[in-house]
Length: 54
Image 1 (cartoon, one colour):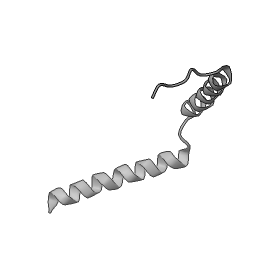
Image 2 (cartoon, one colour; image 1 turned 90 degrees about the vertical axis):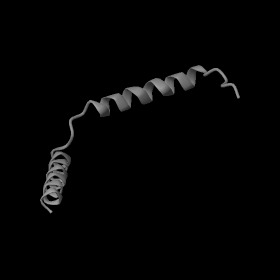
Image 3 (cartoon, one colour; image 1 turned 45 degrees about the vertical axis):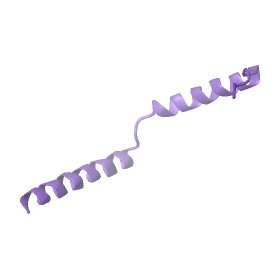
Image 4 (spheres, helix red, strand yellow; image 1 turned 45 degrees about the horizontal axis):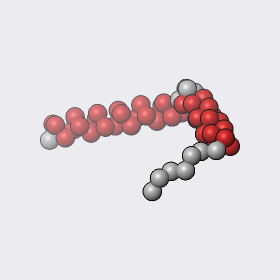
């Protein structure tokens, strides 16, 4: 199947969605999520160490 050419409205929607999502991508990770990621990494490291000791 061939795609039909995008009309101007579709192009504007695409541009606006890209603009919105790009600004979201550039936002910093919230502190709470960063803390949770750090805890997860630590628990994975601790788990790997305990498996190596076993």
